[in-house]
Image (cartoon, rainbow, N blue to C red; front, side, top):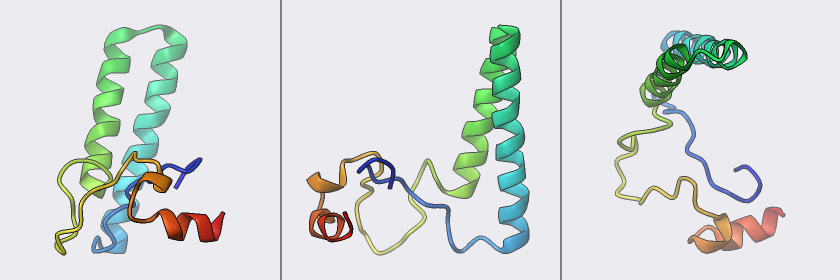
Length: 92
């Protein structure tokens, strides 16, 4: 959760080596976005942002849900507006 907004975590079923590799790719892609922005290189920025998206999807943070219990995806919703409102209030 960030500033009261729910965000999806990475898929906990990923093995440690895969997760480490994917997190490394994500960080490389984020650095590439920064470089492209500083250079004002729109093509490089677009490519780097696509790499960020691909890494986040591979980690399970975007795209189809990785859980199989039928629970809806409340990613990007304010916690207070979801069934997790009482939990959020208790930890606030």
